Length: 118
Length: 131
Image 1 (cartoon, each protein chain N blue to C red):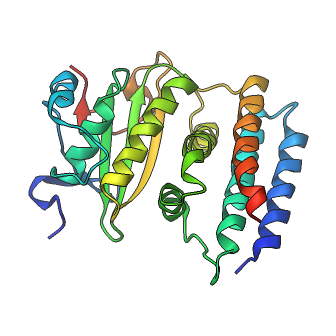
Image 2: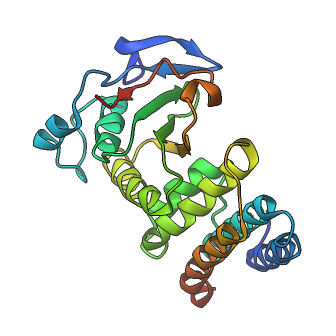
């Protein structure tokens, strides 16, 4: 299982990918930002003793909803997840730079809560 | 027996389709449903009622994944509006709080002017339809 530092590094990696995609592939930039959020959340859970690892997205959602720290960020995380799925599966929804910027704002809000806990 | 076995309908894709509140009226639902407490309704009914509290939600689809106590839920709206989605996410959280023994895979699908039948292959089987 990945540890806290592994998840932090992967989150930063995904953010860097998002930055490289943002100019031409706004949809995939949004996907990368969601997966950055996933790894920040997993880093938060990994610091528990013993560490907690979400088996899948659904279990992670339940864990967020029942977490005193993360529950206030449910809407931000959930929007990143929704946009990620829309970007991958719904061709009728066009993603723009504004969507990337909005996703970055949501991710920053999630990070603002998580990073002090790591 | 699963919580909703009595109203289970033939499978849609690989999951079981759960019929819930296709005859409900959102305004009526608001009269008797308060949310954020353990639900007395069957889970699929509860999900449909809670999400129907958002006026812009046109349809709700609910499936129970057979193996793992997981509900897959799709809320259909027209507008691709993050502020609207935020209101739906609040209701999703209330559902998770009321039914903590289930996991949920929620998704909000904006039609953006398209007919729903153009976007999905299950358009005619909602758990909730706005009247």
